[in-house]
Image 1 (tube, helix red, strand yellow):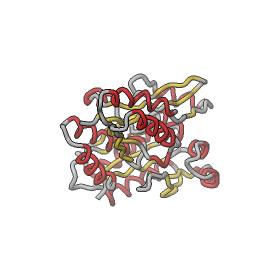
Image 2 (image 1 turned 135 degrees about the vertical axis):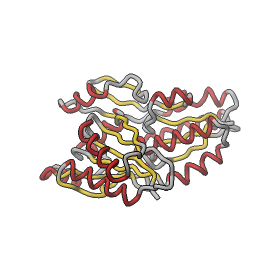
Image 3 (image 1 turned 30 degrees about the vertical axis):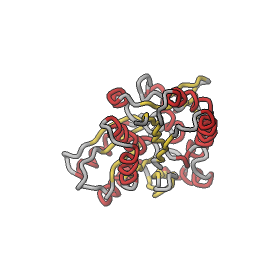
Image 4 (image 1 turned 120 degrees about the vertical axis):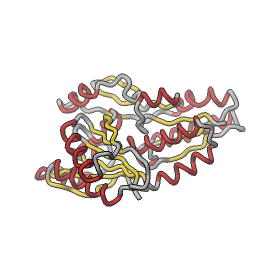
Length: 286
């Protein structure tokens, strides 16, 4: 049986990581001149983090280097074990070039071993819900093929949509064009984006003000939500609890008071690119 791995750009809350003993690669971020590996929120002061960003500190992220991947995977190859790695969208980082370099080096030393990779084509909790489902299946004894088949079906259904307060952070990280970022700063325009089925971040709408943007997102949910599937909506925010409260009230009003909603913070690596006050929703569509 393989060893299951994911990474912290597939955000899973640390209590779930502990419950299922999930192996993961910690993606790093730097703020105030110090680098931190993200640990799924175990030691993160989110209010302090986003407070620093609002005060002018610019967090940055960096790719893992090939040796990071070798250090993580080689101990299992030495034991004669293969690896199943469920990861965030390969379209959103150059780190996968380093992963390929590491794998080529490992294959020379361990030609009988393999890494099976599954691209969620998502980010943040959109990738996380898939990575977590895979971890649960793995713990229950499912084969790699069974896990990949199931995640492939779910990948076509998962939606990750979010509103950003400003596009400047996404522009700085190269996730969107400069022209889009300039437009987004005009007239209190709030862009709404999604991680599409190709794994890229694209703009799906613009609204005048935060509340209009949140209402736009909830209206899309009503049209797309899979009511036949038992699911838990993830409502995530980057230190924006009051507006997230408003969005939760809208969701319950439109989808029913009994709908399951889990509130979680947006982690610092993702937050470095989307910025403070971002609000996102993740759910399964029809």
